[in-house]
Length: 410
Image 1 (tube, helix red, strand yellow):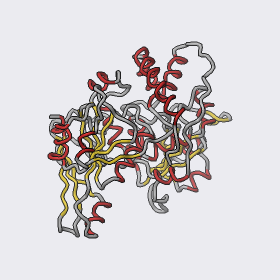
Image 2 (cartoon, rainbow, N blue to C red):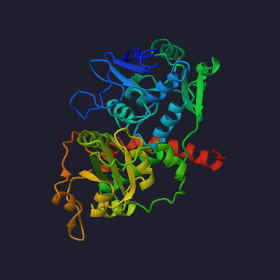
Image 3 (cartoon, one colour):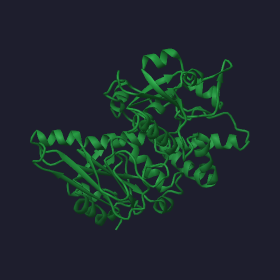
Image 4 (cartoon, rainbow, N blue to C red):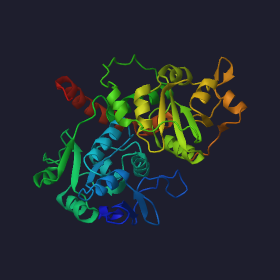
C-alpha cells in the first residue's frame, strides 16, 4: 500500500521529562531524499534512506512536559506542484491544528490522470515539501482520491488523529466530497484558503516568460487586479523569532529567489552547512527586472520573501535587500560569508555586485546539482505547453468566478 512508504511512530514517555521523539522510518519509498543528488538526506525533512531519523519536537515536548495528552498527529496531502507560499501557508495552518504534521504528496501518474502533467516530478515535489519548516514527515506516492481504505491506513499505521484540508471544495469524479469519511467520523479539520495566490496564476506568468524566451511576440499583458495583499501579521506568521547572532557565523545569501524551487533549497541547505545562521537578502522587484528583463520577477518581493521564510534552512530574510554587497550590510548583520544565488558576474555602475565580499575574502562558491533559474522552470512548462495552456484556461474560469463572488474571508 502507498502508506507503507513511511512509518511514523510518535512516542511520549516519562524519560527526560516526557521528551517527545518522532521516529520517521522510510521503507522502500520512491520519494527522493532532500539532498541535491548524492542520495543522502539532509536536515530535518523527515524522510531518509537507511537508518531511522529521530527528531526532537520542542513544542510537543513542552506540551507533554506540561501534562498534556499525547501529541496530536495531523495529515494533509496535495500535489504541491511549483510549490509557493500559498502551499506553505496551508502547511503552516495545518501544523497549528496539531503537534506533528505529516504530509502526503500525490504521485505523478495520479496528477496526470486527474489534472494533467505536473511541472515538477514527484521527487522534486517531495523535496520541496520536506524543506518546509512546518513539516515533520512526508509520505510519497499517495493517491489523488482520498478513499476510506487509505484514510483508515493513515489512522492505523501512522497514528494520524485528524485529516486536514482547505475550505475550498474537493470533489471526486462522481461529484462526492473527497473528505466525507473523516468528516463523518469527526476526524477532520478545516483551514482557510490563502487568498490571492494559486498555482494556475503562477503557471500563467511562467508561460508568458517561456513564450518570450522562445522568441514570440507577446500582446500587452492583461491587466489583473492584485489579489494578494501582504500584511504585517502574515509576515510575522512566516517569520523567525530569532535575531542575527553577535558571535555566530552569519552566512548571507543574496538573490532574487523567484519561483522558489529545489535549486534554491539546495543553495540554502549548503549555506547552512557553512555557518550558524543563514540570512537571505531578497532583491527588490526593480533590481530583478533590471538584471533579468521586463518579464521578471514572476513573483513580487514580498511573495518571494514569504517563500524563503517558509524554508527550514533560512533563519531570517532581508526584504528588498540591495543587489550590491555594501560595507553597511556586512557590518550591520555581522556577515562572515557571502553566497550568491546567481554566480554569473553582474555589474552595477561598472562594478561587480559581489566585489567587496570578494575583496575581503568572504565570498564563497557552492557546488550545485540543480539550477535555480526561472527560465529552467519555464522550460519545463513549455515542453508541455498545449496541455498547460488548456488546463490553465479551464482553471482560470473557475478562479475568475470565485473572485467575482468572493466575500470576506478574514
